[in-house]
Structure formats: C-alpha cells, structure tokens
Image 1 (cartoon, helix red, strand yellow):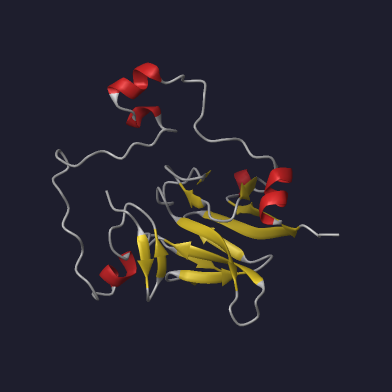
Image 2 (cartoon, rainbow, N blue to C red; image 1 turned 30 degrees about the horizontal axis):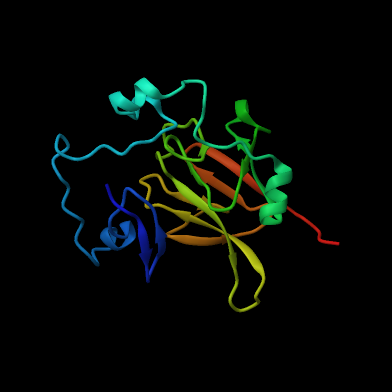
Length: 187
C-alpha cells in the first residue's frame, strides 16, 4: 500500500495513495502501477477485526480497542480547540454531533470519524489545524483526498485543501454539516 506524502502543488495526501491523487487526475503524473491484488500485502487495520491476520486474531481481545479514548477536556489541554461537525442533513440525523480532533480523517470506513453514508469514501477528508503564515494565527483547513463524490465547502467543490471557518457548511456525500469550533482561553 502507498505511504502517503506531500505534494508541492496540492499539499498532504494520505495512504493508500503513493502519489498525489490530484496530480494524477490533472494528468501531471502517471498513476502508480498496482500490484496484483492476490500478491499485494493487505493493510492491517487493528480496529477492524476482519483485517487481522490469523495469529493476530487468536491473540487479540475482542473487547479492547487499539484507540485510546480521549475526553474533550484532554483535547482542550492538548490542542486548545474543540471542533465539531453538526449534521444538518439528512433530516433523520439532524443535530447529531461528531467531535473532530485536528488531524483526524473523516470517512465511511478506516477513518477516525465514521460517517454512515455510501457516497462518503472510506477515507474522505482530513481536518487540520494550521498556522496562517501571513497572520501567524491558527486556522482550520479541510483536505479532500481526491474522492469521486468530492467535498463541498459552502456549496463549492474543493480541490485539495480549503481553509474553513466557524459556521461553514461542509458536504460529504449526502451529509451536510455545520463546522463549529470552541477555543480554550488561557488565563
């Protein structure tokens, strides 16, 4: 599987990509050659017991998670921010709140924040906390991983990275979210 990396034109990209997916879409570079699926080593995702090897499955406690639970208070201490995606649509999920730690991946499967939507890719987008080099202030940005259905910010499809602000409307698949932030005040 790919290692992910950084593209000078489009910014960071994550596994399973070996090269920037936007450069491939724009025809700037050729797509990487794929190994035959039966020869390729499977990626081990420890939170998904179906992806464990036989030896790992025998020794793994099914009631333990490899991810450590983090409380909102620990997020505030570590990052100084709490960020949320609040579902606006579909109506049956309206008001549902997803806590997003800066740097986490949002997707349908194999992601940190899981969205149950068939039009959302397995790893759809990442929300990052960055420093704006011009103002030296913190800002949030969302990075779409080159997904077929795309990511929209305020009804505009984004390519690569886009800065997002409090109350921006973010759409992934059939889900429409309101982006909310809460800043810790240091005294």
